[in-house]
Length: 116
Image 1 (cartoon, rainbow, N blue to C red):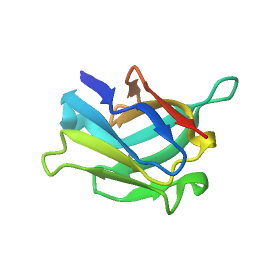
Image 2: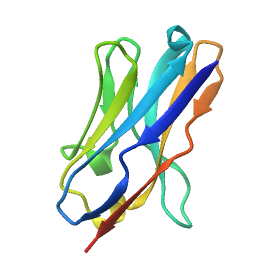
Image 3: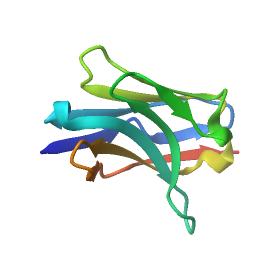
Image 4: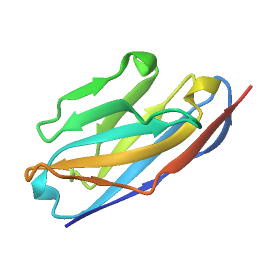
């Protein structure tokens, strides 16, 4: 089993920064990639960034140059550093782990609100 717990969301002004954390517990050795998704009200959930077990990363176009995905050396936590935040970044942010079995696990989400 794998469990994910997000933290770090909150209210921030335009241009500000937040760092989200995704704490991973359980069978970390079964994880092939960890991703951050977000879902704004009335919108579909969308991929923001991911990091593979090998350390490769990818950021989606809307956040390139502003967000950074990383993890700690023990691979217990995956971070999403969000800079130069815009109102359109307002959403619930979810952590997702893809496992070698092909299934995936979701966290409960953390709210990010960017005020103008």
